[in-house]
Image (cartoon, rainbow, N blue to C red):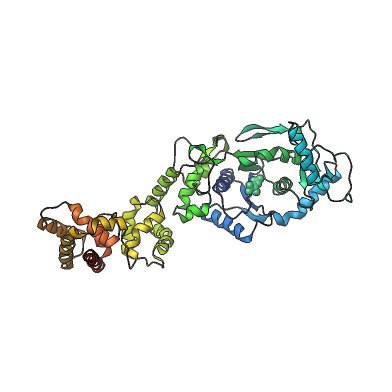
Length: 469
Ligand code: GLU
């Protein structure tokens, strides 16, 4: 069999969509699996939307996910000569013809056809007029044989296609001379010797016409595999408001690239009931016939679970690297990497679904000032806590060895002095005093990590706070 060549062909629209990222991942894996190559082609022919910035966003997103193309990036806009030449060839061979029908005329005829209850395809008015290049403003259409079956055996959806009469003679060049999308894609896929077109099921409707173009150009079409669209919970369309759709957003929300990739792998593809796959493992296992035909649900809870699994497993130095920007953002300045931060991160691994959440939880250690969470302060920093806070402060100030065992002994002694009250009565006010929140790892561990001087300062500040009322 000839070499496997896949391609990822995003339109730069300002962000890397979750569905596109999955398309890229599947193309990459398929090429890897078969010792082939992945080509990256930026489909930037829509000049208004295609800025350098949106191209950068795409490339950054792919890099972050670890999806590396073997060739490219190529820009479709720089391949215009090839597209123009193909259109000229089709005109010369009679597979295409010039059409003078204006947009208004077409709209009128279409309206009339629809209101008579018929479906509209181009009615072929200019099809046999043999118009030359000087016929005035015109588009170029592909001449289809209405009887022809434009079908293919989709590697995911199985036998698919339409009879040409259902499509009609579509335009391949606009009246301003611009080649249209289907033409450019086919010419590029041919020129790049793409063997497998793996793309979203939203393109199913284009494929019949593209097959007609391959035939008109006298070439064999590649194989096609369409991936089911990603939907939200309950099978609903993804909504930008409810479910983030850009890879960038997931990154900002504190997901690890490996977790996001793993999540994407499992949206519409499965291998038994295995959930966790390394990139290598996925590439070794990935086959298109295991891609599901029905729309694929994106389950956020599963992403959270995966992210936590990956956070648990990440070596400490890598975890700190990944956490650093989130910490810096949480405190508003760059953060020094200390052994204490390393210890805290080890404690937070099991308690954080995202890096963002972990940074929030680690904030108390790296921030100079800690604001109190309103609810926590109301509940725990009030008059009845005052004797406890004061007693603990005084005893802790006298501690010579600031370690967990000694801290525990102090807490036990104060608890006994205060009439054997529950440990929560001691731990919670201290926790709010030193972290600003009512949740943290164990109180002795937390105090040990924060260190004696800072812990005492914060407890003293909490005592002031309570006194001031
Ligand atoms: N540029 C198209 C898109 O972003 C994809 C074209 C294709 O894969 O054939 O939807």
